[in-house]
Image 1 (tube, rainbow, N blue to C red):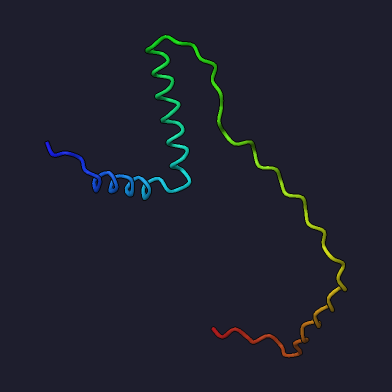
Image 2 (cartoon, rainbow, N blue to C red):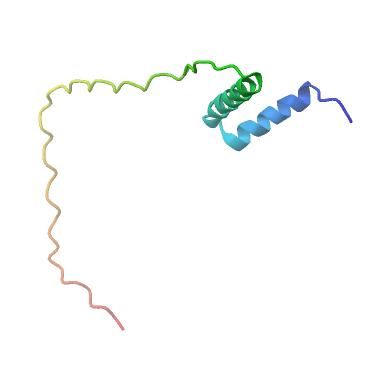
Amino acid sequence: MPNIGPMEIVGLLLLALLLFGAKRLPEIGRSLGSGMREFKDSVSGEKKVETRSELPPPVPAAPTPVAEQEPAAAPPPPPEQNEPPAAASA
């Protein structure tokens, strides 16, 4: 059985990046870490208070004040078509 070298590890990381995407990798790592922590705690029998290290939800940005502008001139009305509709040929 061959040894796993640095090139194989890099290849596996690139494959994971392609499969899951950059947004999902932190979520996957976080869930794997919490799963391993729960497994370790259940095997050792320790009860530990769980602290969440998630970021707080983003605060919506305050709307920026819009400077008063003169109303734009209304676009000219579309030209009237005085031509009769073309007869459909059968």
